[in-house]
Length: 145
Image (cartoon, rainbow, N blue to C red; front, side):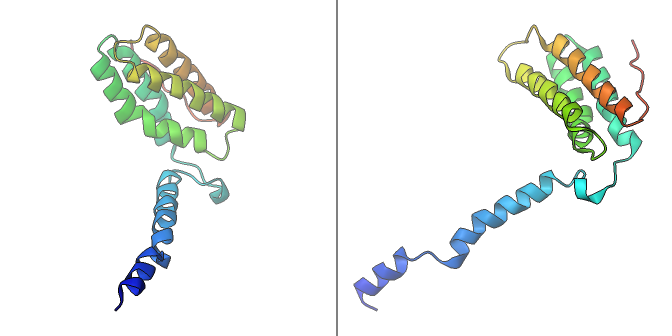
């Protein structure tokens, strides 16, 4: 094979080279949307949705210990909060409020030092979460002191 032919072949993109990023992106989207699909018409079990509120209670009660607070938020509440916001029965404004307040809490955790607003933001997230649960007719778990 001549040098010119090799250079020509090296500059050509194989069909797989453009497909790989597209397939990767599709797989990522399907993994992120596996919680609940609006087209499915189904909702998640009540226990899973209510874990969003009870996980926030655990996080609030763990304050001021940032490590324990963040662990409770991530391990118990985080996935359930996304599932709650994605529930097809929830109206968009309630879902948006849950996601916006969750973003503030996540930002507080990313701060290099303990954020003075974390307690306020966690309480606001619990309020928006409980309102969303009530809008869905789900039971809102109590928060032990």
